[in-house]
Length: 184
Image (cartoon, rainbow, N blue to C red; front, side, top):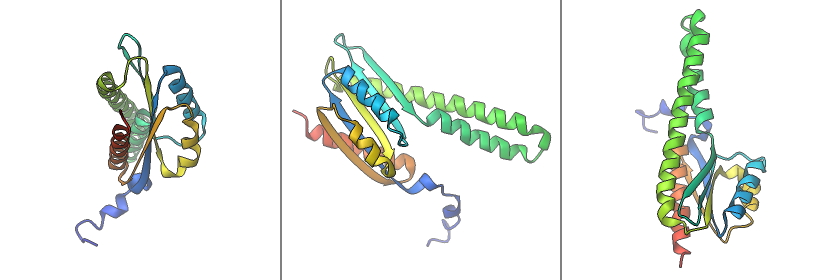
């Protein structure tokens, strides 16, 4: 082990080195995609995120997403605020509340950024009247998540291991390549 990075292993979190799966489904109707989206949310398994993207007959793109960005950012910065407050006991409620509020704002900003980026890509990729569903989940949830995508005309699966964000990007890229290869 490299002595310079030996201490970093102590700071790693459980999700730092996980296998992340991404499942992308292509749908001929927004209703079918919405039904699978609802089924994925109700399956009881942990999802990193679920994004439903539809394009109506006029070309308007709609995005519905359920993810952990807001919740985990609020929890993370709230915890940081709590730990900061331990230095001065009377400030714990203030620092915890401030950290959670800032985390919520940061998470919501990331949420809106994701939605904007997805809308831009969907406008050029999804045909009029069709939809797509993107599910991201840890490997441990695969047996519960994968069966719920029943109405998709085409499915693509990607997986990657590593740090949470990098694994998610790698899995998404793999699924996108597979989806592009199955195109017309």
